[in-house]
Length: 531
Image 1: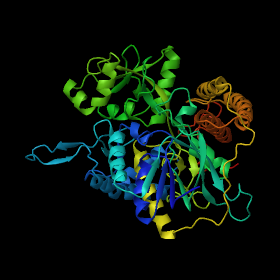
Image 2: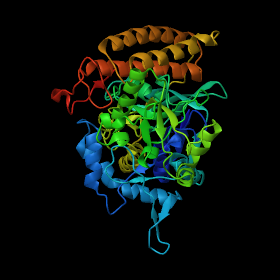
Image 3: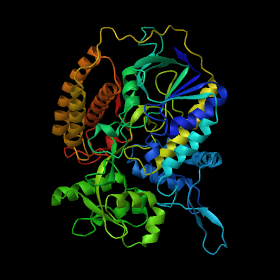
Image 4: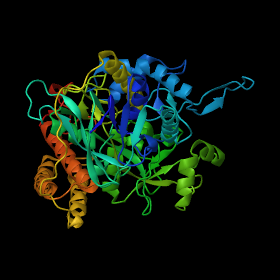
């Protein structure tokens, strides 16, 4: 058994910044299923929303967040995260993070942060590093981690299940004591124990056929927390990013909302702008409205995509402001300085997750969750662009403060080693790949941007049948990373469908043709599921 003072599952901005803050108080293990830099953070292009300009204010940022959240945000949580944001940004800069700056006009060389604007924001407040902000943040945090000898990173390790006193058959309040983990290279299961475990596993984009997320985003933390008995909230609110590059060779390349923030316009294939028919903010409307508008335009015309046009901006500006997007599109034979970008919506971000307070505490003692895996109440029914990295920074800081103040100890329990019983090596990996594909296609077709009760019930039936098959397979064969991820996406798919069926209204990202309007009775009302 590997014993640490702090366990961290996930190596994005939430997990890494938390690990740095608790490292002075004991030994830290970071468990990550690929290499240390692979995370949703690494793919975040736009930036971090925070109040750093004199033209902006906390009140403006709070108001924009509440408006995007469509009546479901927890205002006290929104205020805490917005107000504590600038201090956490300052810490990142101290670590060596370099945000893009610009020269102040007529200032004789004085420079200031170059703030971008994205959908739903009334002011420019997005701090960015060109269009590779997440990658730069990840690099800064990993460099700081490398200098800390008491932080150990376990790459290619896949968390299987949380170890709790309830699962061990003990009475009293349910408490987390650690996690069983598959070492992929050695093909063996290890036991990690610690007084506190932090889930920082990111989201679940791979539950859908089309997503902007990397392959690792299979909802592992949510599935594990649910199986352990934690409450899961608001999983019906899956944000579809309106603008994913539409190209046969581009797997899941995101065209940042910042492109629209700099003046790009959404157009139908005949070149006509259409967003003015849907919202006063036009192409900068909140994401749920833009994604539904694009979906509607595609269904009306039968087109497989719409266009995003920024060609009226100078070519040099486009190349300097969006170097990664420009280079990537050029690699696919598309010069965005001269021609519009074909785009479609794709699953992007889960606004629900493991129910926590603003300090990351879950209902299970000793278990914390921070970042996209958690539901703090910040995002409500629809996340305001670039609030996610902000939430990860603030909540990981607060979780670290909370845990180091409490100084919890490991419960006095005997943790059994992992036992495979009579399980054998899997002989039919085609079963895993087929079920994986079937879940993702069913979720895309029946539980997408626009829903109906009939479609949801159809999806629920399909997923239930698949879960039965997966469960049988899970107990018959020795675990592999593919099987673990399949088991998790099936669980998360079930949670999304169950949550959507429980909300008899349309609100934010949950839009159903059977209940097309919001119901005041459901304002401020979370959809909560427990095993």
